[in-house]
Length: 257
Ligand SMILES: NC(=O)C1=CN([C@@H]2O[C@H](COP(=O)(O)OP(=O)(O)OC[C@H]3O[C@@H](n4cnc5c(N)ncnc54)[C@H](OP(=O)(O)O)[C@@H]3O)[C@@H](O)[C@H]2O)C=CC1
Ligand SMILES: O=C(O)[C@@H]1CCC=N1
Image (cartoon, rainbow, N blue to C red; front, side, top):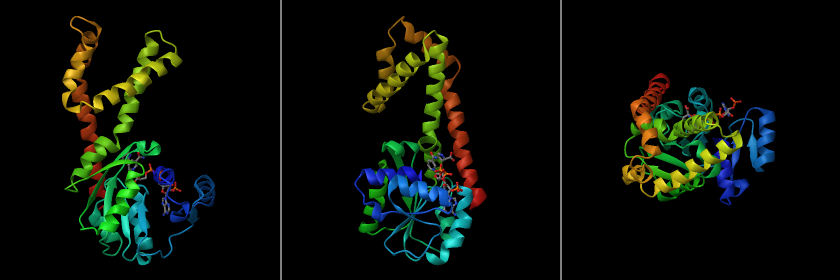
């Protein structure tokens, strides 16, 4: 995800000189430097107070990392993308630090079509708020949440969501092959169907039933397919899947916080 954010910023003509990566693995450091032409450090050192620290490690790595760098942090803003990790914990691990924004982006950030949810407990000054928004808009769109607890739902929906869509697309392609199409044909037909349908639906999200009806001609083929999806209760399965991800996000919160 960190690479996606860096890529997005560079794509928006952010100067590589403004970005520094902390990476302890020397081989990885070299790859990052070569790929993005940004500077990197093996470990966190004192930084300017108006720099933003993007916390992009795995949730289980956040506590030890923050504790180890807490004496180096002063009033910089910490922008966390770690799933489940609450602002209160980040503050605690960083010796009472307050200037924290918690966010949940998604993997579509890689092509700057991500959606990021943001939350902070602080009243950010305009400059800091704009700087945060500049970072997340480099990887797509963003929304501010009014309640941190919504972050678990966001994680289950737009954070994890791309994986459900990839899972669906993979199954869709396998079905197409099962019906006699070649892999190439199946990938092209299914991929473009998903892309076109997404674009069409984005304009009419409050009228999806109507869109469904516009495809499902009376007595036609789509009706038969839809009947099967309904009889296997795809909607209930989706609810179960998103609820499981939501509960896991809450559990990570409780476990590490
Ligand atoms: N993947 C996704 O779609 C999304 C992920 N997230 C969140 O983003 C965060 C990162 O996820 P993701 O990018 O998938 O995970 P990765 O494991 O790919 O990235 C985490 C990186 O942090 C590095 N790291 C660990 N400890 C340190 C340290 N002490 N100093 C410097 N670097 C360190 C890891 O290095 P090493 O491998 O050497 O340990 C690794 O390169 C997670 O908290 C996740 O919840 C949020 C939204 C979407
Ligand atoms: O699966 C995860 O835990 C992370 C958070 C959202 C997407 N990936």
